Amino acid sequence: MVGIRPTIPIVAIIVCLAVAGCGGSDSANSDLAGIAPPGSLVFAEAKLKPRGAPKENLDGVAFGIAGINDLRAFLVAELERSARKEGEPLDFAKEVEPWLGERAAVAFDRLKEGKLSDPLIAVETTDPRAVRAFIDERTQKSKGSFEDASYEGVEFWVGGAEGKAFGVIDKTLVIAAGEGEFKAAVDAADGDSLGDEDRFQEAMGAAADGSFANIYADLGGVVEQSGGGIDPQAREILASIGVDPTEATAVASVIPLGQQIEVDLSSSLGGEMAPSGDASKLLGSLPGTAFGAVAFSGVGEQLEKAIDKIDASGIPPNLPPGELKSRLSNAGIDIDKIAASLEDGAIFAEGTDRRSLRGGLVLTTDGSDEATRAVAGLGTLLRDAKVPGVTAVGSQASGFSIDSPKLGDKPVVVVTRGDRIAIGYGLGPALAGLDADLSTTLSGYPSYEIAVSELGDIPISAYFGGPETRSLAEVLVPRSEDSFWSIAPYLKFTYIALGTGTDGDLATAKLVLGIGT
Image 1 (cartoon, rainbow, N blue to C red):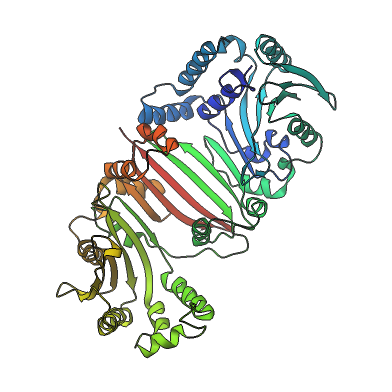
Image 2 (cartoon, one colour):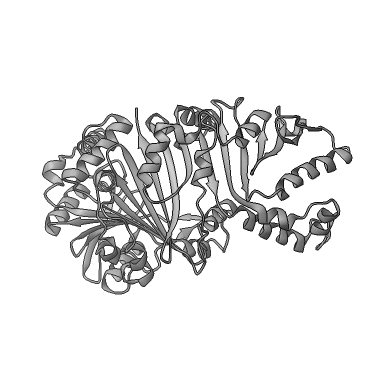
């Protein structure tokens, strides 16, 4: 019986067809969310029977990634093959299709030992009696042991090696991790549920039209249940688009468009103001040899906050609180003026393997000489202090380099020219980062132009493209990472682009993945 062992019918049906489904934007009023317990942390829903243009677009994506002409037919065939292999043959068209409804959903109600709990799975049906007959027949034929149970007038089955529970609540097939979880779904259907919560409805109301699937996450709930801890890098990423994770909810809408996949995200700002600015011009001016680049605005403001924080706390044991700025000032560096002169920033990387990997950080200024003088002053200060490996760059630009075995086989180079500062791992990337008039820049590549066009009015803030992206990932990711290597053959994206912005009191982002062979 599937639902108990994932290789056979019900669980596999739901997972496969949810992948093959295509949804709209009506999830805010989803009946399926009415079965999820209140406070559930994650909820995802998709339609099971795509038709017309949505099906064509989804099949186009499947063909571009894996050469599959009809994704749903392929998954059904794989499901039937798996069932035969397990000794429990399944005829999907006769046994499942007649009662299968339009939508399926999964919900995770809590964290368990730092990970999401087992999912609650819900599938709409058109004929509850036929579903019960199907389940009854499968349990009788199954090699596992099952027991009939009842709760609040709802009959269900419990058993198998994992003790899962499954049954029909109203017209919805429900599969739960155990008897207690199934009873909680019955309680939610008759009382308070995730679907009744205002924060859920508001978040899902921002889901995009024409989506393949909509995924809701209660970020604040995740932070609270994890003990208030959140990965520092994740916190910084969320903060960069103005999201306070302790208060926020988020929804992602996945939209297949034939030759690309679009993921639209929106999140409550948690009472914060999203950063403004547009660094797309800087991003497009980066070297065309880069396989990846990320741009960001408000560099000066963020640097000023960081310096103030360090100045207030100090750096034990040699730098007491309140000493940082005064010491820099004594060295002729006014960090506040430098920060005020900075505008946008970008990071880029280039190379085709581990040995050739290099890149740089580029900062733009307001045209004043504050940052330029700071670079020159810092280089002089380091040389006067006899810091090993520090040398002047020469005539190509104003700046210095630091060469040390601790930094690898290339020097770290800090240079400035005009309204730009560049810090590169190697002289080449640093100098390339200074030159906004390179003969070949990212903006000159067709895939970059397509990415910008697909993002529409949302300024592009990150771009990864070219065959080097995949080849480098394959070099950098250890063979022990089975999850990556299992999908590596299908990573046929010609580009990945991200844009961020705001929409009223929501932080928004759009991720576009171009598909190629």
